[in-house]
Length: 379
Image 1 (tube, helix red, strand yellow):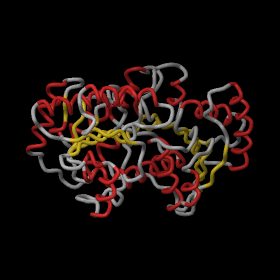
Image 2 (cartoon, rainbow, N blue to C red; image 1 turned 90 degrees about the horizontal axis):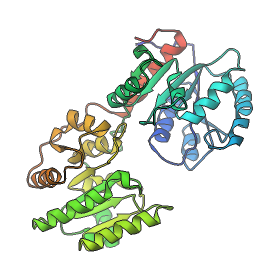
Image 3 (tube, one colour; image 1 turned 180 degrees about the vertical axis):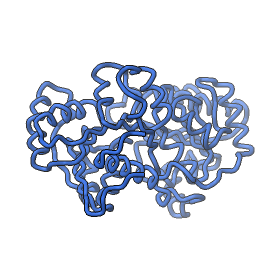
Image 4 (tube, one colour; image 1 turned 180 degrees about the horizontal axis):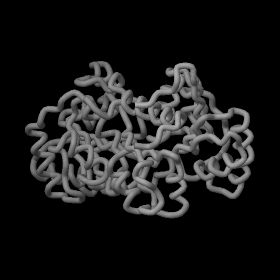
């Protein structure tokens, strides 16, 4: 594995639309922190957001530029970013989203010496010339084998396989310790807030307020289990978010129609997801559209909590490797009910995590940076 010369420090600029929330944004901070800890200079360019405070507290620099805003005015940020890059003289520009990648690509044309260009494909973007900018990196990181296959299938003539590197996202095993259980005071406060969730096994489905996350499937699951006289509760964690009021009303109406008002809770995003996962009997991952990775699967399993998910995309890939008992065919309502009932009776043991750790992702990414800077060819 390549390493940077002992006296050689790198300057890496990461480009991302904003730093509010999300998997790509979290990965940006995780790599920024690893760079600083290794003695390198870390700079992030974005429109800003609530995560900037943490980024700067961990030693990185932030430069505010709206490089991800989908408007004609964003083109004017090319010159501004070019001036930033000329001033910083980075070794690497790492783009993590399509529009910032275009802005970075154009901005680098006027920078000498030209920085190395690295990209990450975080999602299953619609194939197009616009999306193909993320394949122009000297090295292209993808977050799962599923995503690697997707890129090669849709862009067979745009990228050599040697330039693609699979670096899965990782979780901090200190933040999600194996076998963790929340203390009694947290549990009391939680059930005081959501009393209808107490007294039966809790199933948790984490996900934003979009029908693609499978909230309706989870509600129908609870209805089917109730019909079989299996008493359970459901938490739709994070579905109640601003701008999704009509969708949440639709879910509440379905809950009421199925007679589940005393069994199902829809909550906003919370900061105590570790405690919620750890207290859950099962964690659900029922996304109708294939995910590129599936971080919640790894987080829950790291805590020794069983996961049930549809066997497609990155979620299916992770379950096949880490917890095969949790795989269910996409949209198979009968099989989903049967598998959940089985796991409620007896769930196979879950070993401590030995892969998909944050430290693995950080070291692999910094090693890739070093290979690029030192001119080591892609394997």
